[in-house]
Image (cartoon, rainbow, N blue to C red; front, side, top):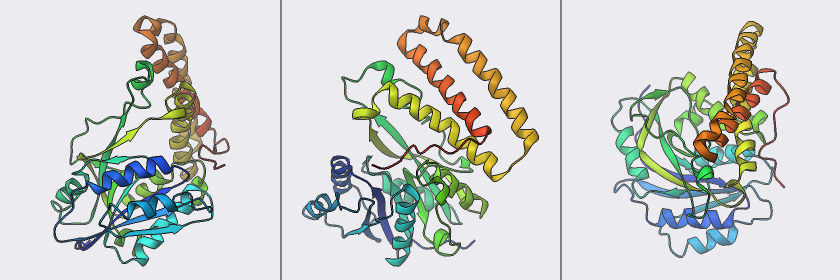
Length: 313
């Protein structure tokens, strides 16, 4: 497909009752290096009907030279907020969007690295960057080194992927404008809507290219730096992928074979639990986390009701 020229870039995210994280994000945007010949603006979608992000955005206008477009999406849920973001991206006339989460810190070259990769291809692509977790020194090492937070960052730039998260991604807006592509409502509170969205984009012919040179940082704070969060997240991660896989393509034989393999993996993990203590708390809790993730995969394979991991209060 003919490549769309980069003219107007939106730096876009959704937020919900995380004013301090949003403030840190906006401070990082202040130092973001920008392309010389492109129009760049910011888009914030507040999913709190009480506009908890409004004052933070107003304050940011005093130290950020870029125009900030602020909208409130009163319908609660991830997909409602994200679809509002897509709609406003089109309404504002952007040609491209740099998407990230409200609890992240942008590395100063993150946008330029996306543009560098994007311009290497003749066709429209999706540039998929990486998000690296960061911790305060007082967080225990067995938390910091848990597999949930140790995201793979060794993938080489240029690898083609069939899906990706939207915590650091650069997309051509024609992808949504010409294909009426939306985030699916079935993931509104369960999460996984970004993987579903980008996998549909891939099937439409948009290659998703790994870009390990574009980096954002995600501080792990508060209740996230706990074992309770880790196990909850592990179950969710296991559940979400397998649920989406078999929800879209119900194949009883494949489900049975996959389930048998998962039960074998579960048994193996349980056997390893006690010996893993030889590697300290980090080893033990990593094996425990793998066990919980496998249980989540089993639940997803059996097509249990989607969990509402992101149910708003």
